[in-house]
Length: 340
Picture 1 (cartoon, rainbow, N blue to C red):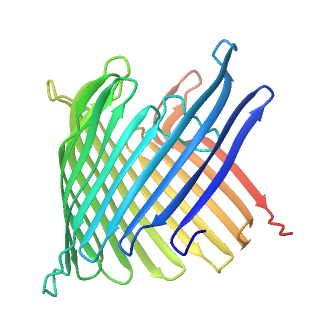
Picture 2: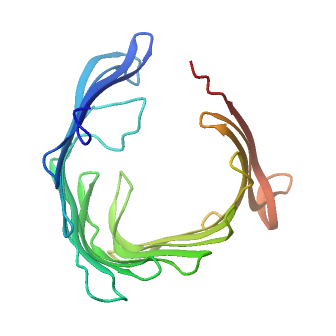
Picture 3: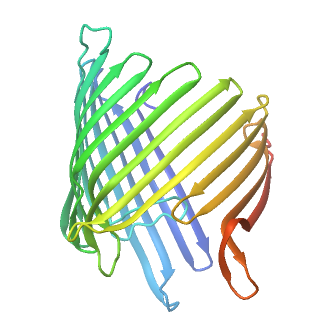
């Protein structure tokens, strides 16, 4: 640590199995340049040796991931500018990486307005974006959000967004532009709501024959907390997809979910989840008991069950008028933290 707001750190991690290995090491840091600006960065290197599908040695591959981010923040302005590069074969077996072979530029600029109003407490117009160069297909893709966010009483936020975007998949560029709306509010002490909806372009992710489409993606959530130790969370997720060429509907997907949690005391809680997938006509029931004596010393017991409107008629599965349990699972975990 260089100061209260600055540091430089290093790390190494790896996984080895005989002759094959994946080793990753590097460093990161953060420097406070002034009272309103910060520079952070990281640089990682990876060495990987693994066989191909036929079990043949491919040799040792050396790859990297590096990034830098500049942040400027005042009472009225918030500005970010960053750059990241991940080589094509960068691999980290002990972590999770969604994409390699990219150069990414990210930027954000927000201006905060404080009107003299008891109803509209703050307004935040901002632009947030990233621009990616795909090293495999040698093409650019971009995502731009133009947003106006309003802060109202009862911790209420309302957000309007315009999206100008595209995505590269299987060597083709697909339009993802559209419009969106989001709201969240603490209606009462016990009830909190959240909802969002977007109407935008989408890609049909078929590696052999992808095509352009459009559709609606939405999510709604209601949290009801009648007591400090008890809460019920209800949510709905919906998505549909239409082919742009002939406007035919390809699919619609809806999931209903109810999560109930009872925190008996600071050590013990019970949780039950009920979920219904309208696309697959599947009902899942999950239960969990958790006892945490101290962080690291825990005991979990859980059970899960999947039910479908299907039954066995002696030779094949056929539709049924009621739910039948098709799968079940049970697990437990015990962990003890020993400090030396």
